[in-house]
Picture 1 (cartoon, helix red, strand yellow):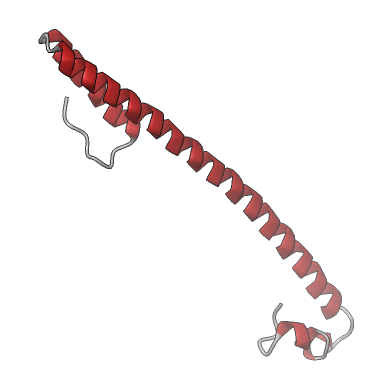
Picture 2 (cartoon, rainbow, N blue to C red):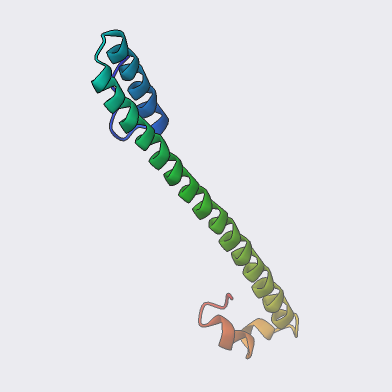
Length: 105
């Protein structure tokens, strides 16, 4: 088994740690195997905590994107209401006051 890169997913690192622990146990290096096993458990615990934190961030991104989509919908409806006020409504206030020089909301 090859040593994984340091930036590998934590499960790749722990798989290598478990493999190394097995090799040490087979060679009767019990103290080193215990140390590797303990460290491996720490990596598992911390890796899972990082993944849990990433899930929380992903959940919040979902909330943010939903709020952004709702805001976009409301802005588009408001633009349509203002633009439908008359033939030249897009060139007059209040449309131009809200949209600025470019003419889009």
